[in-house]
Image 1 (tube, rainbow, N blue to C red):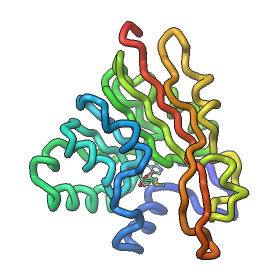
Image 2: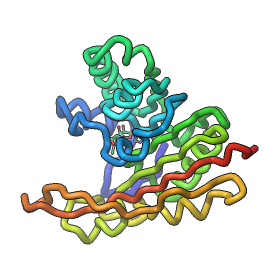
Image 3: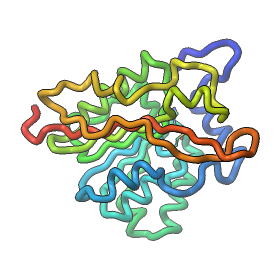
Length: 219
Ligand SMILES: C[S@@+](CC[C@H](N)C(=O)[O-])C[C@H]1O[C@@H](n2cnc3c(N)ncnc32)[C@H](O)[C@@H]1O
């Protein structure tokens, strides 16, 4: 079980199931913009989507031909995502495997995926470091690791964020964990995006973006 502070919820399966049950749509239903911009030109292969939520990213990948494994802790989210995939197109749905796992305790198969995407998976740093190392190990030679999160600078931007700096990360902090003999770092970015802030006004936030390619000769 994830360690948590007394004054905040445990971000466990029960928390996420309740959050998804409380709303028919928690997220926009659109694929994440950084996934679209960074993965659109990649040749489809095997993809792993970490924390797949309501499935918009997995559906977008499968529609482009990716054989996609979508992992989430919440069965409510996974059921909703699978329904949406079937409604979009049975051929798309057939290319997605929906997998309930707590990724804190799960190790994906090594050197397997041509693309691993993790969008807005915010874990305490000790767990995050382990997760990102496992994800890196699961990328096949020549494959792409794409990690996106809320940039730490957002904590001063006026949008709602949990007041725990430990949950947020810079792309550089991930890049420095990747062995240069095995990885080419293609993007470390704080990418600006405009959203509606807590006061209703447009606010600029930044996505932490790490894109790296495992060298084809790695392993
Ligand atoms: C902030 S949401 C992002 C959802 C999706 N990636 C997106 O960008 O729309 C985080 C997702 O990760 C899932 N999640 C949180 N902790 C998890 C864990 N330990 N194992 C697997 N999934 C988890 C949640 O259920 C939720 O769907």
